[in-house]
Length: 234
Image 1 (cartoon, helix red, strand yellow):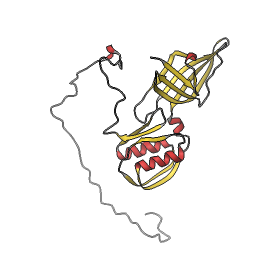
Image 2: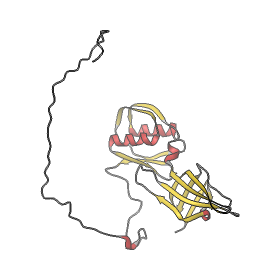
Image 3: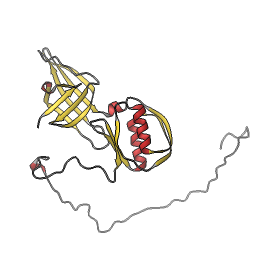
Image 4: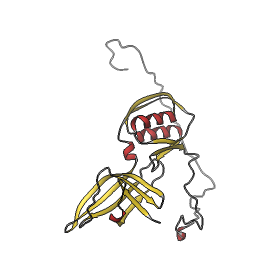
């Protein structure tokens, strides 16, 4: 395994304090993060900047893509500056512009493609599925594109995420997407001694009782009509 860390296209792995390197992947639309520390001293003159693009490779596999969103600078020793760097995946770039628009009688895929083309430069929709579902009406009132996609997904039982090539994946979560790899005893995709299997019958039940109730309120009539200049409450 050979790790490569490109910052704005330049290799910077030799500047990384490797004990500080932390990458967190969260499935679907949740944001992936990356954290690391680098130090500046002597002839090590590089320092990170806000909105720097960070791409991490494991051999040929791209395992992170995003931008620097926070830098904490401190003096760790005489003439040594330490930078604690926090990165966020490409969702940060996706949400640079807010969506203010209405869509009527459009297929969900068409709505997503329109948002990407008008508000999200540099992103693609190669993995947005055709849902066959058209929405009669939906309004986005100055919302981040990621929130728009989540709202669309929740309406129709789908899910979505951005991959590290800035492509949108929008898919039926009941079916899901294929896993990136399988686990076997020999393919080197898991730590051998980490596999653990637990059986637990503490939640097993032979009978389940469901209790409920019903409440009947007083009958109510609402008056709706044209104002008469005197009535103040309807």
